[in-house]
Length: 252
Image (tube, rainbow, N blue to C red; front, side):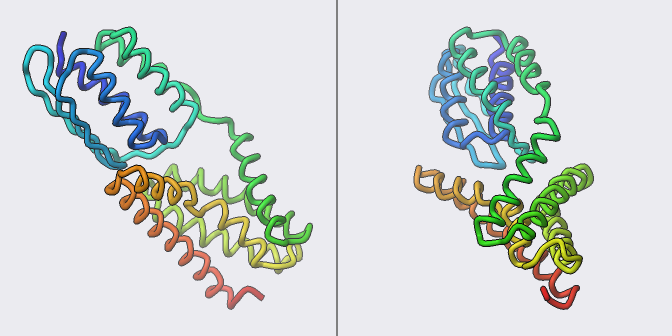
């Protein structure tokens, strides 16, 4: 058994779990279990949202260390479910490194959610929250229109830009301008209610929740990193909406 190659394959699985939305403690636990299943001892895993490190002693007595820098973020719970299942199958079946890579490739080849489903989710969030916060039927309609455009706009931006900070700023600026335009055209009645649709689609609420959860579980480094990232992105969203009001002379 090539234990260095095996550790590389195990880290590939752990990396993809982290990229597709797994919790840090879940990734650490999965990597440790996979390593111990193959006979590695003194397994130590350090994992944050941007870095994954693994040091272990192989059954042949050699101490191996490998490090990964995580630069991607593509939350996909369908793939994550299959990655979790793959980690369990690895622990049970102990496949060769090449077989692990082949199984991993099959999981990663699973398609993204259909576009209509993403649009439907955006419409439900934007229209639902507009009505929830007190908007009338015209505001809700404008919120639905705004939600559809934001979803399509974000998909287009992500093809050209990978920095979430830039994406959120551009998307929030466009959403604010469009919300004001919809109200001035008479499609919506209250611009602040329509803007809620855009804010709820862009605000990193899940990331903030996970940050608090990580800190409560003892992963202080990961929790603080995620919280800082969420607050910076939230600030970019605020700046985008504020700039849209400044450029149009206010919300009235």
